[in-house]
Image (cartoon, rainbow, N blue to C red; front, side, top):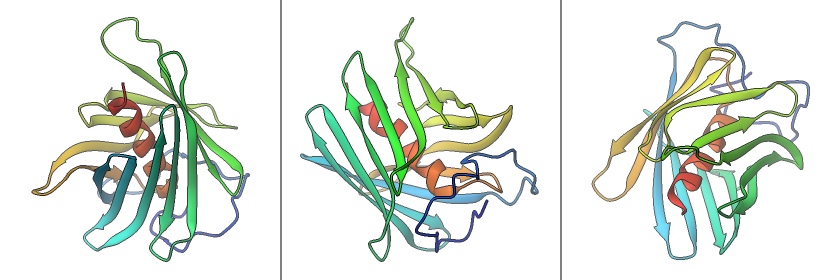
Length: 188
């Protein structure tokens, strides 16, 4: 899977998996900084690569119960679309690219005070969310391997978090999942 190539193809390849078991050196993780801009009518984010500059923007529209977010590259081309419902009993966000399902993020009914999230992949099982998306301190694990680590990041003018992605992952899918988890953990 291309991880550093930001000129993604316009069509989704259904034969490739969104998450793979990391095979590269552990010190070669890509680092992203996701900065949020909270607006009264939506959730907007800017995603920067560290070091570097902006690589993606997230345009979010919250319409009461229905959530819609679009991840675009810096030229304005749509990379992924996120659509779903945020209700107490049905918290589901689906990630698609060119109308092909990539992942579904669900908030499971909490048996305790801690929310449990499930990331389902169409043809390859699921990704475990280990930790707390609400605290921005968690990891994504696939097939027993940590594929991304998310940590809170302090910034002077806005809130945000860092995403460290293992080699061979589809960065745009991993980033879309982290945006879904952030939105779901912040909306009551």
